[in-house]
Image (cartoon, rainbow, N blue to C red):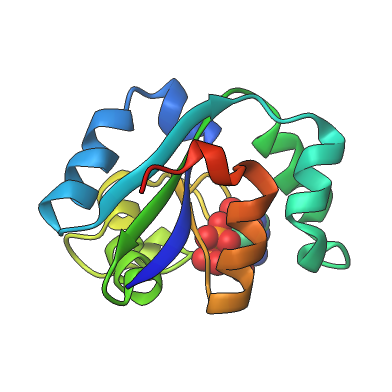
Amino acid sequence: MERTLSIIKPDGVQRGLIGEVIQHLEKNGLKIIAAKMIHMTGREAEGFYDVHREKPFFSSLTAFMTSGPCVVMVLEGENAISRYRDLMGATNYKEAAEGTIRREFATDIEKNVVHGSDALETAVFEIGYFFSQLEIVL
Ligand code: ATP
Ligand code: MG
C-alpha cells in the first residue's frame, strides 16, 4: 500500500471539475483517505514548490496556485504514486495520453488541473505539508 498527495488546482476548482477528478480517482481504485479545501498563501505555495524555486516558471506557478482555493487529498492504493501519475497524464496536456485527466481537462502547461507526488519521498513530504496524522482516516 502506498500513499500520494493529490491537489485539484485552482483552475480545476474554479471550472467545476472537482467531481470529474474524483470520479477518475474512484473509478480507478484510488481511495481518498483525507480531503480538504485550502486557499494557499504565497509562502505556503513557495514552500510546497521549493524544488522548483530556480525554474523560470516558479513565480507564475506560485501566483497561479494562490489565485483561488484548491482541493488537497491523500490517496491510498497499491502503487498509488505511479498509478495516479498515469491517471493525470503528462505535465503538458498536449502530450498527455488519451483518457487522462490533463488530456481531457487541461488548457495550459501551467493550468493543468491536478498535481500528484512524483516519488515516495516527495509524497511523504507533501502529505505532511498539508495534513496532520489526525486528519487521515485509517
Ligand atoms: P505537478 O508537480 O503539479 O504534479 P508535474 O510533476 O507533472 O506536475 P512539474 O515539473 O513538477 O510537473 O511542474 C510543476 C508544475 O509547474 C506543473 O504541473 C505546471 O503547473 C507548472 N509547470 C511545469 N512546467 C512548466 C512550464 N514549462 N511552464 C509553465 N508552467 C510549468
Ligand atoms: Mg511535480
